[in-house]
Length: 501
Image (cartoon, rainbow, N blue to C red):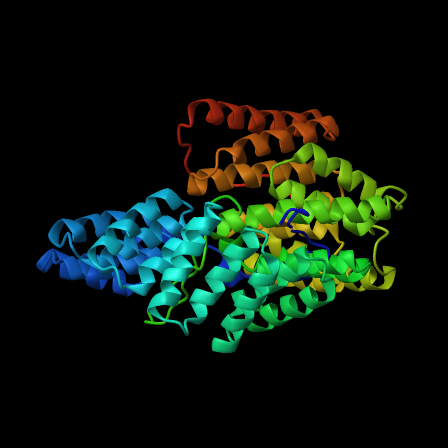
């Protein structure tokens, strides 16, 4: 989308209350052999007794849905060594590459599958999607035409051709094809999405709103549709609706969803045959959504300079992208003029809601001190449900999550804590610790280490209370920088910062 696609939160705070639950703590360890579904172990045993192409392919499919792409490709390579002309295996390997955003590799595998079986529709459908990802709309269109030549009533064929027409800026043709796709199958959420895109780009914002809403009704967590909806609302002059739609679009549903900001882990798999199937590279999509949401906030803030909700939400989006300097400016703008009260009422929301949240916050602190982290989390969540702007409560929730091994949620909570209290060095200290711990837990994006260092430097600039506090921050910062230089694993790291009373 040329107008700048999208992401954010204000209602994000409320969304997180339901995503950071004890049941999610530890889900990030999905690659641990003991936590893989029994089906993986079953096929592993079958492979040991009978290393057939079929068994390798079946295990690869489960690994793919778990997001373990490298392991899935290894199994598919073994399968193809045994059966080089197996079309479905080549398509599956192309799918794994497609979901990882490796479109040329996906196309290469699908080319081979088509050479083996020129009439298999699945190969053309996936290759067309890969060409869309590469922005090679002409080739995407050609594959869609091939699909419709083989099956003139294919809803997916019309959908893919409509998406290609959007890329080629042939919006009238795109609307016609997406309408044909909907007529063929009115459950195709992406047909409504692409028709909404065509309406939006041709300036018919009300019709685009209607189609985005229908896409979301069919797929309630359709993030790009929510952000497209936000843009159309904004173009219609409905800023409040735009903010709400954008906030919905960037909620993180669980720790795995948060992890996808930096690396795609697929959908949470089950042992059932109908387990969720990743539709696209979620990590790449979320990053694009974040950037597009920032663009929407840029426009809203041009209209309403200093709007605290838009500034804070843009700051949170910046934080998720690792842009801490920009985020800090936004947090300071959002908090400008708000009373800095010692009892931690942020000046946002209702003071009565804040007062009602305090007892739950204090009970959470007592649970935390007693080492009952699950109960602490429940009480902090209950407090935040009453008063989502409770910065120190977000901070202590981060520490409780970290103690249960859920460093992804700890990072997210820490980001919210500093968004409401950017003047508190302890909160930045905890954020730096969470980022550091998270990186070492999953060995993911090295940018996490740089972000941890920036957070700790911010803690030092805010002047810790005592020389001992300052030395604690300096020690952790030195460890981060040393780790960043050597990337030598340091095991059993845990957040050691203190809760805020």
